[in-house]
Image (cartoon, rainbow, N blue to C red; front, side, top):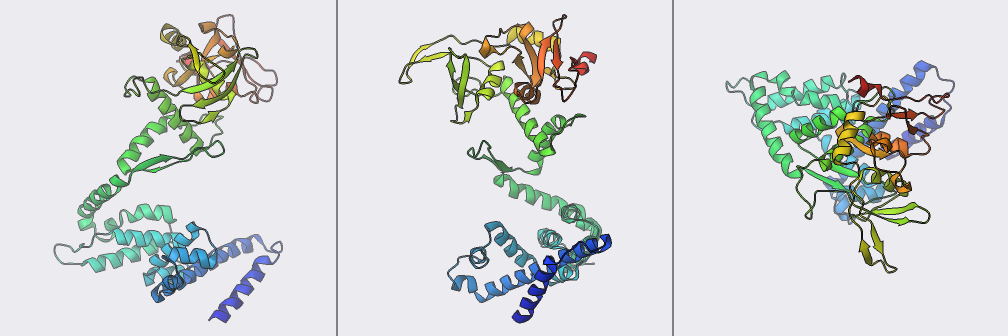
Length: 423
């Protein structure tokens, strides 16, 4: 068998290196299907070999505590592929499912979904009248799901699997579903969690898991802020990230969050200021993360500033009075005038917006109605990005006009947010 497999591997390698330009379009598609099936068959063989090795105790005999560690050593693969191969070996314990993959009636992801669905069925599914026993129902569910594998990819097949009893045992489907959901909720609640990694190359990775109810609450909060505009080039993932930030900003502006250290929750940034050059330095948040001077400038547009004079060794010599920027009556006046983000075409309401200094406060710009405009987080970043090229000036009616860059409008005709004005 080994010699035959080595010969097949050699022939497959030669085929993979052969020129493809002489193929017709039909042949390209056909070969793609055949190559995909070949990869599935090869993985089935690997999974069976893993099971055979584990049954013989080979990993332990070679000094490994798990099949995953043994595979990493023998095949020189990363942890994730090793885990996936061990998982495939577990799935293919069901001979009917394994044969379906070999026959091309299902792929390995579909096979995993089918196995998980069957394993999740309650142990006692017997009908009250004795018309069918648990084994018969599970066997019928396996047949139905394998038949549906020809119609649905794995992620859709998973949703179908959640309702499989509606297809094979409708008499007990509701009762079994209620019991399964109750077990699922009790199982997942202790496993919920949310983590934020340490910064790496300017990025913080978020990861976590939520139960279905909690996830529905989060999705309901994010969805209104994820509606793309006509010229929105953000990916769905970027839209959700921006929505999460906007929700957090709104929560920080509210008065309903509990106090933190005797004060309302807040983002604190310490930054050096050069009075001669009239320039910000690099900022540092209270969590020790460094941010660029441009980010500091943008945050300072709508922040409380506490000037502190430091001595040569960093000791505090004098602390100036705290000054609030664009708050109270001034903030309400901005709400009345701009009615939301002032950027043309944006529909974000006032509560989602920062007060942006047209003439930067750090450069001596005043904090008054004629030097402020409301901007949502995304458009606030656009105005602070010199590469974007947008500028703001105030018209004779004391309302902000936005001057687009030449690549948006060669004539750079001033424009305004007509959405809020119509409202």
